[in-house]
Length: 283
Image (cartoon, rainbow, N blue to C red; front, side, top):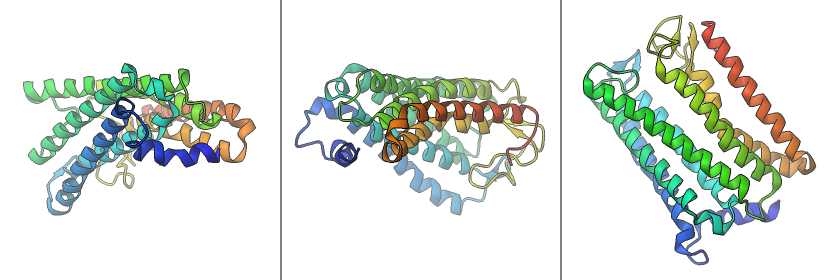
């Protein structure tokens, strides 16, 4: 395990000297995507401190910041897991095009969210004008594209893993991306449709993010469909981290441990979804 961990910084950030350019394409694309989100985050944080306008009871800049952080975490996760793929598979079209789609759609999504925040208007569940309705639907297509890209990279890890990858991290990375992608599509589809929560993410309670749970903003007066969506998406980080921990502590238990973690993740998503639909706050 120590061998593969020690090779990660080299594989992820110092590939110019010993890896062909075609093998660096996906990695460079994802690093650029991470940089774009950081570039958006800095002015959003400054605006949050200077702009006193509110939307749904909170700063108009709260949503851009949350999405920028989320996309940063996703990009960083893929940068971390990409070296798990065998070098010859890493330069294949599936990985390169998936990385490009994720980077491009993530940039387009955050650009629209930031523009709407600057205008003091909602980006999500906003069909007030024909253009905003069209762009909201386009955001849905972009989100699906991002998630499918994550699934494809997870599948390639599963099928074409690097020989030096430890079992827990390899299995956790592959299953985490694929299972997280599927559950994200399901929860995002339910959330984005607006049909179960009257064109919003709230189920009962006060239809405002004011007084919501710290940092994430989840409702504390009723159900909130953002909760299961959050846990579904972060299976992508949870299972690889579990795999890394198992590799270092219980390597012989890594395979079974990842399956147990996956089942636990599914139960959390299902449980928080039921809780939200019953109109009960997460905390």
